Image 1 (cartoon, one colour):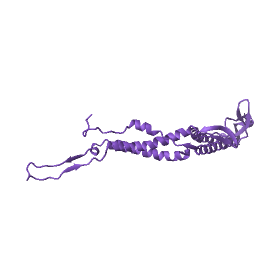
Image 2: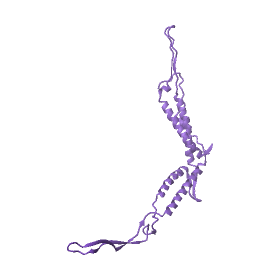
Image 3: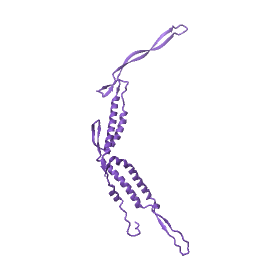
Image 4: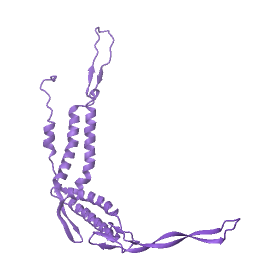
Length: 257
């Protein structure tokens, strides 16, 4: 019987959850001795006219063989659907194409899933790359492998004190002098800025490529998941080996072993 890989992937998780739940419940139940124990007691008075008491009984609520059967049934579905997925992952493949160009042929589903996660991380990396300051004029410097600005000059000035005598000194008063500072050019700075950042247009183009490749990987995964596959039934021999059918002894009372 054939099915699609996408269908198997869709049911695998709930089947896995159910199997683990059944196994966990059975594991805890078989560790509760009262559930597996039963008893029947009848009372017979010593004398015919003695007090009559009703019989007492407690039924066995859980049989270990039933718990094993439940586990086997749940695990059979889980093991088989997992086997179907894993076997299919070796045959379900698709090409990764961007703008009509095949970048990778016959990529299996596990690798396509891996690439999706990687491209999400790379998108974050590229998005945070440093950009050149748009307020500056940048040119590429091939010798240094970085960007630089044209040299621009700025003057360096120095404050020089100046004064003006408002009133000459007398024998009774000192001179009145007004003091101020004047900026006098004393030199010229020639400045060139450098940057190891990237142009915004280049980063934008890389982001577009990351998104395009991520979309292509998703399309490829969907195509691979649409591949028709054969359902596997391999759990039976494994679980039958682990849990052979219980055969009660021929005598009525089982030997305590």
